[in-house]
Structure formats: structure tokens, C-alpha cells
Image (cartoon, rainbow, N blue to C red; front, side, top):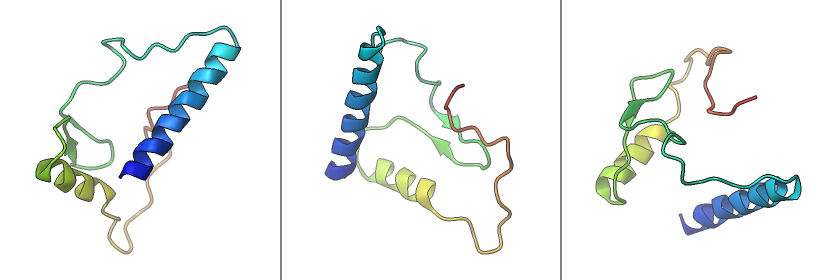
Length: 85
């Protein structure tokens, strides 16, 4: 998990540097930046919450990363990635 954390922080630093280079300014403390939690993920019944790291969080991560069963249909073109533009 430490490696994933370091990689994600590197991604954030690179994106912030690019934004700074074109005259922008990163804003990470806006109240409306994240959707409300708990919330259901699209294309399924999995509800995710913001919880402290522990057994409950690990269980949620395991459910989130569980592959679809063999023969499951692919997700449709309306999948919401959270990306804009």
C-alpha cells in the first residue's frame, strides 16, 4: 500500500506542476470537490464510505477490486469515471 500511496502522491505533484506551469493553481480544499459519502458506485450495488484504515476499509477495498464473474457482460459506454472533459 505504501507504494501505491507514493505513486498517487507523485501523480498529484505532477498534475499540480503542470497546472502551475500554465498559470493555474491547484485547489484541493474545496468542500464540493468530492461527492458525498457513503455512496453507491455506478454499475453495481457496492456502497463505499470514507472510513479510517482498518478491517472495515480492507473489506471494502477487497469488494471493490473483486473481478466480475466469468461471462459477465462488459460495462456499457455510460460508465462514470469521475473524469471531466
